[in-house]
Image 1 (cartoon, rainbow, N blue to C red):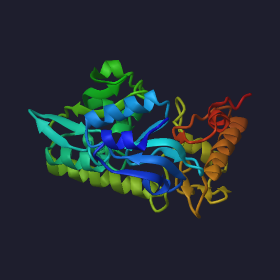
Image 2: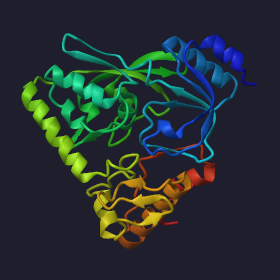
Image 3: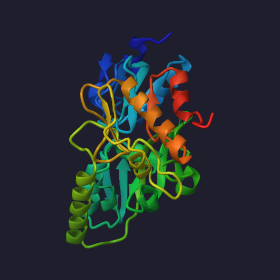
Image 4: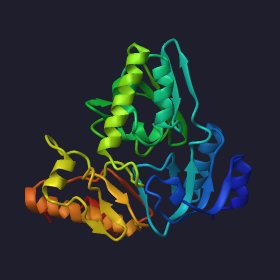
Amino acid sequence: MLSLEHIRSICSGEIHISEPLAPMTSFRIGGPVDIYIEPANTEELAALVAYLHESDTAHLVLGNGSNILISDEGFRGVVLNIEKHFSDLSVDDGVVQAGAGARLSKFVDFCLRLGMAGSEMLAGIPGTLGGAVIMNAGAYGGEISDYMLDVTVLREGSVRTLTTQECGFRYRGSDLRRDIVLGARFRFPEGNIDELKARRKELLLKRNAAQPVQHPNAGSIFKNPEGGYAAKLIEDCGLKGTRFGGAVISGQHANFIVNDEGAHASDIVDAINHVRRVVYDRTGVELEPEIQLIGFPDDVIASLKRSTAS
């Protein structure tokens, strides 16, 4: 049985009961969580995770809330938010140490001020560094793992440092989903600061022109299939602008679903399943969702993973 008193004895950070999660996600969708905690350091985080495992309590580690969709009913369990206390950035002998809670925008700013080439490709990608590491985020032909030396994680109660080879990085994925990423170290090649900042500006303008940044969204919904682009497949199927309640398949970028008019999480799920079904029926390509569903029944989660051929 979970004891709030015991949690308070472990954690010196903020603790809230029945905290709304919608404001903490880029979709601006989702119900409340039973208990919301901001652990102040790694020791508190490890102790909390151990206690939650011991009490068989579901928990979710949250950063900036991008790339996730939380159920309208919320999350029955505990959310551990690491953005506030795990966001330090530092550099030593050309190696950048970044906390998992650091926003990617802040990480890019920090690296560009030091003339570190390659970091500019991450400009405009939402979220925190921890989520970017787990998802192996990237753009314009590069990935965050290209410049990574190692990753520090909390695994089975112990803090471990993993080489990039041990992380199993791949296109928009890794073997880190069962771990809690605490931070990572990077080494970038040297570049001209003015040129890098100009390149970042160029990429931001390109991204803002191509993506529906004026509406709440969770970034790309689907992974690009091998040898193609999800957005082109969706657009070619005539799905741009299709509405499901308050959710709309963006007319600006077909691989985005936006919260246009108070969308429910169920609207987003309906849109995802419709896109998968139509694209498969017309092209034979099965689109794989990139977004993570939180707090949904198992059958709803399974519906997004189930083969559209079945």
